[in-house]
Length: 153
Image 1: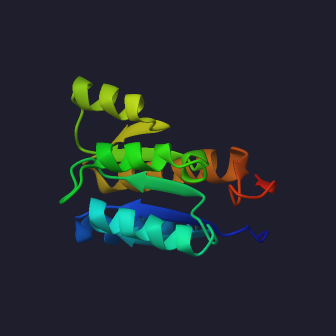
Image 2: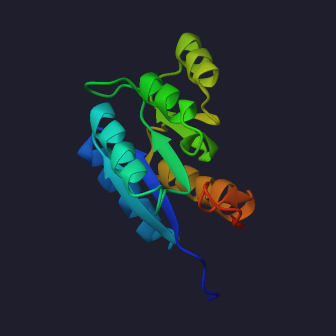
């Protein structure tokens, strides 16, 4: 197997079982993903404040967020990410059970790059996480560190 560059994904999810499922999908599919997570909107804002203080080092390549988060909603988190000149360059995928048109519209208005509904079937979840990896982390050209000029594929 060819060595794949490890990509960093920040997952914002309050359900620990969903986080564990995401980790299992990474392992099962042998994906080169380093998964970090925070469990509510306030933790997410704290994460980014710490990153700012560290001069935006070691940022995630992709952010995946649940919509219904404690303390600060997923939509508010997206809005805050997209207000920052550095963070706004990181793609944000909403990964939630909600299929409400109003939720979808609001997330895109706030700057989400994609909106995915969580499948109920575990095999479909694993498949979707593999597709996220293939599309967003292996085929899209992303800015590795938004404060530099380096681009990765």
